[in-house]
Image 1: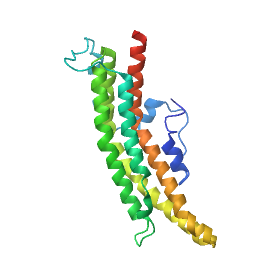
Image 2: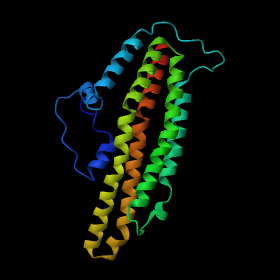
Image 3: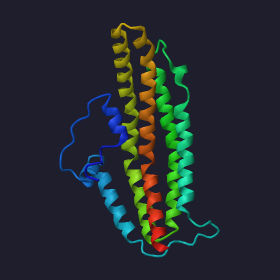
Image 4: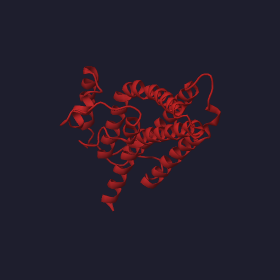
Length: 228
């Protein structure tokens, strides 16, 4: 994880729009995570970890809840991803050239980010609840994931919307390049190129937001496989 922590597809996509700052070499996951948390967050996270370690009892009775299936949860994840990817893939021509420039694209970007939050958060909580019914170890994992989600929420909400600033810069850059090209072909294709890059950035952000859910489901699958 040392070499891949900051190398998500979203980071690589945005690096093509604007050179990223060089990473400090030799930092492990914990050190990188500390850059996202203030002192109060770190204290709260430490207290939560101590409480989570005390989870030793059997998982609570599931009552009438159906057996947990990693396959079913994976299907839930794919349904959410497909719905959001479909929204991203919608024809953006209504956002084409306007007196407002990149503003309609920025507004649509923020709208899609809100849709991601509204659909992924309930899915993540559903998967956490499913894991908590399986074993003490998965209950610990689900509890830790919930704590991390809460601790990082403010930082994510502050950082991810700033992608629209880079979006505007890329819009202006491609438009300027097309105007300087002096050919009808360049003038005709620059907005199409921008729309394609914009979709790729959104899809990369979607996959980044889904990674914690995917990790929980994989942990469940491993647990059930070891029991078999």
